[in-house]
Length: 337
Image (cartoon, rainbow, N blue to C red; front, top):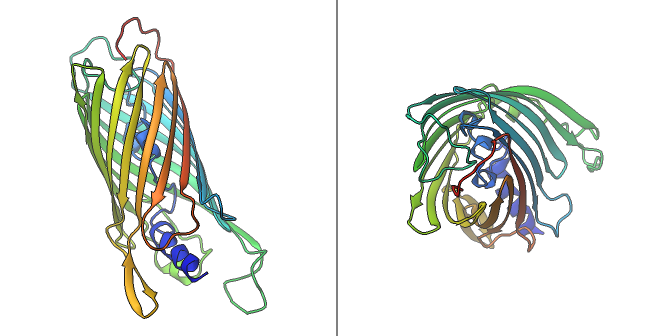
């Protein structure tokens, strides 16, 4: 029981305030950097894409955290992209539901007169693009206290279902070529306290997050290609930092590709806890293998996150499934996937 409580504190230390708004896991590795960076809306020269992701943690625990996200983005014109993100994030008795609308402005430096119709980069593409994006949306937070113990008086517990809403905004920029990319985004610029959690929340309203990511794609003369990347997060309020180190391998097919990868997340900063009389520290460390397939316009991926450390909440890991569809790209009459 003590270990479960300690892990609950550990997990929420790294997620409750740093993840206000849409939580960031490994969803973006399914060709969906738009989920993190608004400047990636409509990044493909032609058409758009839809991604639906469901994430479930700790199957052997009641009221375990779960997350569902829906994203859609589309290249509206040579210089404009639009998108939307809808999500529902539930963690025990608290939940948040949100929706964002995005506009991105793209500046292309390439000389190609026939833009690529591929949903992902290829060594044959002529891609050289600078992008700026803004997402504006609303989030509804709720807290269900109806099953809380009311015998011990606590002024913060009313025994009711409480909810409140607020608006938010993210801004970002990206530089993308067919070989490498770099992104920088500031999230939660407009966060306002919603007063569900007392004085701490009202006096600590800066929940901005700075996120940057980089990656490089190594092409070969064979059907194989390789993509190392990393993503760094910094939370303004808690000063928490985390880094994702990712590696993906692709195998080109006639009408798509298979891919597999591995992602490692380290929170860098740890949480101290007592083990008997010893004071120890544990960081949030996740190892996530990934597997996916792109076939024609359809996308499927699965990943499983395993948490390292002495304190674990239950024996299960975190399961995530993503379904995707790429649309309005037109016909492709070459072996160029």
